[in-house]
Length: 274
Image (cartoon, rainbow, N blue to C red; front, side, top):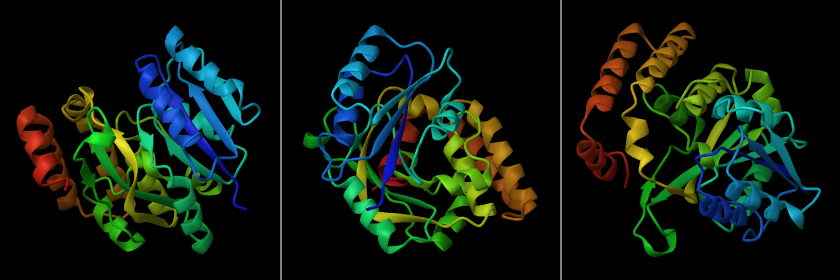
């Protein structure tokens, strides 16, 4: 049997009700339960979040490992620390406000057993606002096979971070997570591609992603422009793209970040999502 860990980071602005649903979705509601759940507490939390985590952990010792950090260090560093506590080769990612489909682990583990050469396996996602059970959700499709993923990675993020299962050995091979605000996962995929890791996606939506009030705000942050420049430099220096492609990519992200929110919503609804 393929054993695996689930890695999640929680910080003070997370919603305790959303966290409760997320935790239930990766254990109580799963047809195949994880062997270990590592929860990184990224700095001090609210009493509601502590209570939710304590209640979840109480009847599941010793599979739930809590990693408290003295201060908020950001997602990239929290995940880098968290991976060192994961006991198994396969690490599933999960966010504190999303919902995993009940057959997510079963489906991805089966795929990995049949394709042991894969280093990162993701899937499509469905996006919802309030209740995924009663909404007509948008789907973010991502390419299935490695060659298509590499092609997309030159322009856009080719993986849905919350859906992935990553080999710990592949993480270590490429240097693991690094801090790059709002783009930690994209940077990781690029490093893995450069280090000859194999990435694939399943053509089914296995995680339901909550799109709250911060969704468009994050995509309007000028921090993304700085991070995007780092990504372009990395791809250019490693022969993934030409100089003219870095210029086009920077024009794209600057234009996108500067768009009014209502234009972004239209693009997400009719161009970037289905």
